Image (spheres, one colour):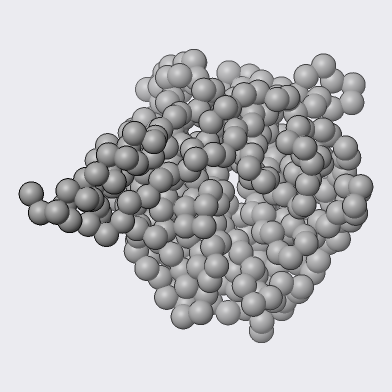
Length: 395
């Protein structure tokens, strides 16, 4: 055996014995040690509203971190029961919660109210503020941009900026060069794959720039995304009207803010099969890696959407009764801690899985320092949880 090969295999064995991962396909060029997120445990629950005994949890909220504070605002739930079995309607929250995590523990320090109830918008962190962009509520789709900054004691400063020139939801957003970019999602409830940008602090119709749309499909909604450096990463999502029955998307792309061009990335796979991050949340794990938590099951959700689209009458009612009656484990929302490596364009599951029901809806996940906080989310279709978990980043 060639001496160089022996040397590489020696280091590969060393990395494996230390608990790190080795990509044997790229062993000729790189060995690396994956970050690990472990010691997950429940550290609290989202509080009930005044006068209520419990809180049904939330999905599709605005969320982010500013310094030693975590912010959760808005979102959706079903406090009055299931829409199929009880005929109840989706509720949109207006409450905001501010938690201190200065020492790793979680302490609720402030609450606030959004200008109106909302969910399914996007949160953008820019400089020392969070921007809550678009969304929807029971009245329709929103064109609002809400700026949230914090005083040193966590007191919120809420500012409603000039509205977007369109009502937008269910997509990704980022700020680059003082422009707010909107990726895919829905405009007035209609799914798109467009990319537009407007000045962050207010726009009119003359300020809108249309960029190249997201590749792959004609529409794309409900995808996790993250801005890293000069690029925006788009992972999977939902295709609203496929001809081949594949509603759940497993492709991924990077948008270059400098050139305006898109680059196709590796498809999202696990054990060689398409893997869904629809309804998941993305956080930066390392300088060249992204962690995605949550997501619906690829096969189960595709099959379900096909039946909901094609069955009629009693057959549709019977399917809904069966489908919505199952326990959370039936739906197989992902417990995999899925890492995407930007340097080698590879999908790599971390060694351990979440020790609790995976989330969707989408779920709210925030990194602060060396901890990751997992707030609520759907644990099965319609049903949310108020549970809050914390995991620890290590190597």
